[in-house]
Image 1: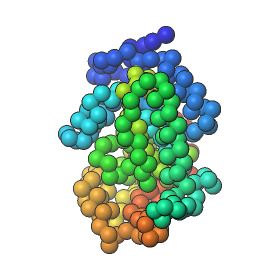
Image 2: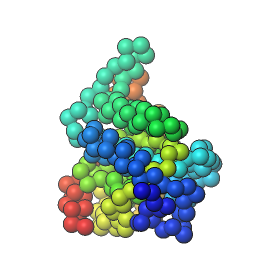
Image 3: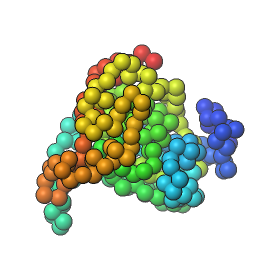
Image 4: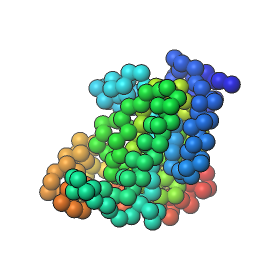
Amino acid sequence: MTKTINDTMDATKYPHPWTQNQALTDRLLKLVDDEDWDLFGIADVGPLNEKARPGRRPKDLWPTAKAVLMFAVGLADPFTRGWVQNGKSGKFYSYALLELDRRVWTVKRFLRQEGYLYFGGEAYGGALFDTGIRFADAAADCGMGYIGKSNVLVTEKYGPRINMTYLMTDAPLMGGDYRYPDVTCDLCDGCRACLDACPCGALTDQGYAADRCRQYRNNPDNQERASTHTVMKCMRCMTACDKKRIKELLKNL
């Protein structure tokens, strides 16, 4: 059985030039379920092409991409804590990034076996601040959480304390399940924790100044080293978020 578009998407605004394959999607979701991944989603590239800036849209970088797969791991899980050193390069990697890499390669192998191409998929620390493409929007579209006042993805289980990465593919996967389609930063209500914690004024009541945030995070004077080869950039908005409060709010939707 195939569908031309997910029932929850607007067919006139985001028309699909291909036929989505439910059987292929079901096989991938079974793989995810067998692996017991709690933060994974599939989104259509249509909304992402609209929200990203010209030159950094998926259609500019990967013209044949049809779906974006989102992966995340929560930083509260015991297996994500700590660091391991690469014997050849001497570079330190967090367990969270290693787990993201494992998940991405598992799906890459699946797509390769099914005969499809994939693009990207490098594991990033933090919440994908610096990629230029709004992958947090894709993660929100496919039900992993919502975009908070901090302009990053906020999840029910971990708040914004996640490591996240993406994988583009030309596979005709069905986007899905859109658990929080209407949730915006209004859910944060009167909370200003992330705004008050921002050291450079990139987060205000008027919105998010991406260039100011990027300049601050990329300034070596504002970075810390977890090891000789590992740099930690500012994530104060993420650490300031009240995870317990967010969890209760999302449960009541």
